[in-house]
Amino acid sequence: MIIQEQMSVGEKLNILSDAAKYDVACTSSGSSRKNDGKGMGNCEPAGICHSFAADGRCISLLKILFTNECIYDCKYCINRSSNDVVRTSFTPDEICELTMGFYRRNYIEGLFLSSGVLHNPGYTMELLYETVYKLRNVHHFQGYIHLKAIPGANEEIIQRAGYLVDRMSVNLELPTADGLKKLAPNKTRKNILRPMRQIQLAAKESKQEVALYHHAPAFVPAGQSTQMIIGATGESDYELVHVAESLYRQFELKRVFYSAYVHVNEDSSLPALPGGPPLLREHRLYQADWLMRFYGFRGEELLSENQPNFNVMLDPKCDWALRHLERFPVEINRADYYTLLRVPGIGTTSAWRIVGARKYGSLDFEHLKKIGVVLKRALYFITCNGRTMYPIRLDADYIVRNMMNPREKLPVEPGITYEQLSLFDTSTVGKKEMVV
Figure 1 (cartoon, one colour):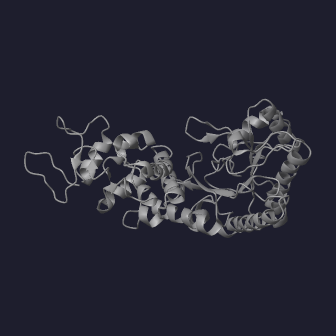
Figure 2: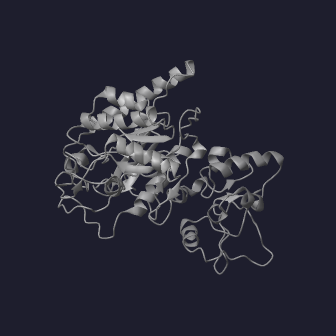
Figure 3: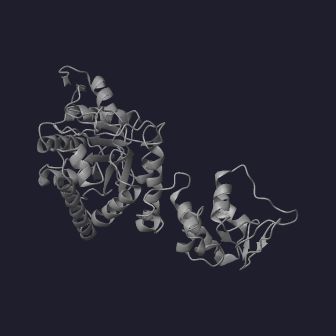
């Protein structure tokens, strides 16, 4: 371990911001707190601006570690105790100065603060609490703060910190207890879930107090989130989705973040990943997560023990639709909102627009295009007034071929724009097949 005693704040920032890049569990949405005229900044949802890194991750906050020193030796972590890397730590005052200085320059809209475990969890959490306390009460910063709770720290200090920040998160790290035992032997599932439960119950109690007494302080008003590393252990997508669904249900999390495993350490227990981080797998999990949170899907609908992993060629919603063609086509002018959500190419906004627009007349495909429906996917699964957009076949192979080749246009006979529904397969040899 290389520890630098004398280091400028700028040098520390370079090290500790780089050390924080593998933690993706930070968003700046979900909290609303206006400036009271006595401090600096605000936390209106629209006031948090987002930008995106080259790998697609959202970056809108000053995202740093308090320290990259750590007593734990998690095999996948660049900051593990056995690694020979330059170690340094901020002081609470240095983080306050950085945050206020960056905010004044309009570089950031808030702070995401995590940390390695210095000496012990309680000592580290005390330092994090001191930092956010000074930001709020000495510097009067009223912008967004996301703080990582340290598992194993005293419940009282986590409770006090929760009234100062907008969101807290406790990283699950790995999806299963076996994975933790294998790659993070100093951590236990029980220790990680305990502060999750504490934050959940305290937030629920705080909401009740705020409802009764409007000036009561709010506890983590933006809720809590967590992160799972995917690809470091052998869990299937089915297991990952099941774990995420359980976390949403049991702990009322706002977000579960998925972080594709990045090979930064040489260790025989870690996968080599010659193809690089499993970013496509991470993307499919986020898509599935969105379907469960906003589209009414259950994890068991998307995957099963017989099909434990997502289709790399198709997004989860399209894949589900192709496995349930008996539910299609959906008649746009009659289907309810939740049925519309099941159609590939129709999102929550466009589904509401369809339901609202039908009150004023029948919709056709031109209307759907203006509403925002992605017709290049939806056209295979819908009808307007009993008709498809083009002559098509309701056949999985046929649909996949056309979806995977966007340059290939559906053949349309001259003068034909729609095809009347039929209950029978009208295909014959030498003619274009039509099944609806």
